[in-house]
Length: 329
Image 1 (spheres, rainbow, N blue to C red):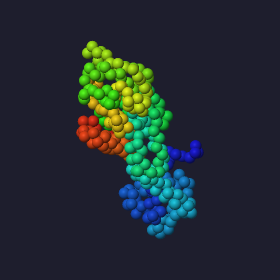
Image 2 (image 1 turned 90 degrees about the vertical axis):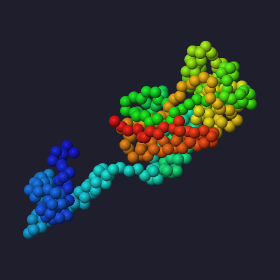
Image 3 (image 1 turned 180 degrees about the vertical axis):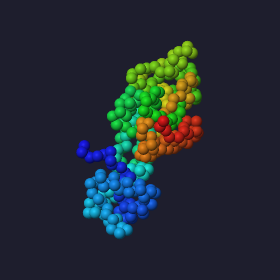
Image 4 (image 1 turned 135 degrees about the vertical axis):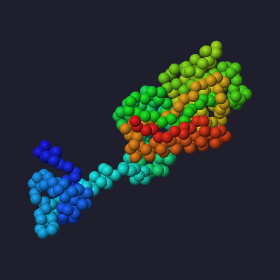
């Protein structure tokens, strides 16, 4: 490779060769390439020096290829075809032909709420693919991206490092969830009943306090926190048949998994909303597969939220983001 004069290699020279093979005339080849005849002759001389062969010899009004030129013709044609079709043409992605992996980072909440519908939609579009849901949260998502273990992530990410972009999917609210056959309280639950009821919370770190407690403390109140669990599934089983209340994300509370046998109502104290976002690498935003995957995630989540609210008789318009795809730049 080091002995090749790469500085002398020019794509235009391959086009010159191809035009001469087709036209067998310097003037007609120049016309095909929209060049002057002198420029075409100059390119031919460069080719001859580069390949160390006359390549074309004039016989009357025809440029006849040498054996070396005839040997090179199909190879040069293959190179030009590859450049035209595989490099210069806009890339495309056909989901039905894709047999690779789709790797999505999800936390416990987003996997439980959206994992099944994402699986169904992606398998319908790309039945030959393999889908991997990776546990991803604010503590490890950067490493997963750096190691190429996820294509995108869905969750809550307050600060993003350079190189990642975000797209808001929807605005999440909070609800109280409890078994009212045990509590037997009026709805929506009053602040008095709320404070008197033992409470549980999702706590991956074991911390038994949240912004709710700070808000209550500012008002001079304190709730009765008795349980922290890292798993939503555990809380669902604990809430049924017990005097226990949990404040959790509304989408989680309204899934059939939780809503069955449990009562949902607004909390009596203000709880800050938060965004559920999709994040991906900025440099991958324009890749056809990533554009398809991003669109699928947005559509599936939007439709699933609408379905959840339709079953509850509530509008989803205030939750679902109407923004477009994340854009690099």
